[in-house]
Length: 146
Image (cartoon, rainbow, N blue to C red):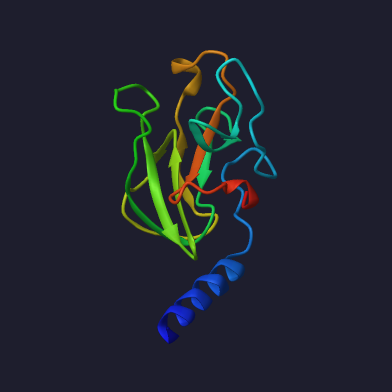
């Protein structure tokens, strides 16, 4: 019982100390959530279990928090130009970030450090608002962080 309380306290404190996420891309001063377009809306809709943060194709992407890149994550089973991403964990957070070409799939990252490049969504989905897709590993609503 004591160890469970200590673990819960550590998780809560680390989440609070982590603060809000860093801006995840170059070119904008904040993380702006994608609105609706002909493909889908950008915020937490089924089967869309995450949030889409607007970015330009080819823009530099940054780590939203300090942690480690755990491995490659792919949003699709098929092969296409945007089927890539990374799993990041640390500071009480665990996310999957899709549509990026990461610099590395394993290793430490610091909040705001260059993570990779946004892939060309316009080539695969003409007319879509280009974006990075972020999902919490536990599938909870990520919109309270960016």
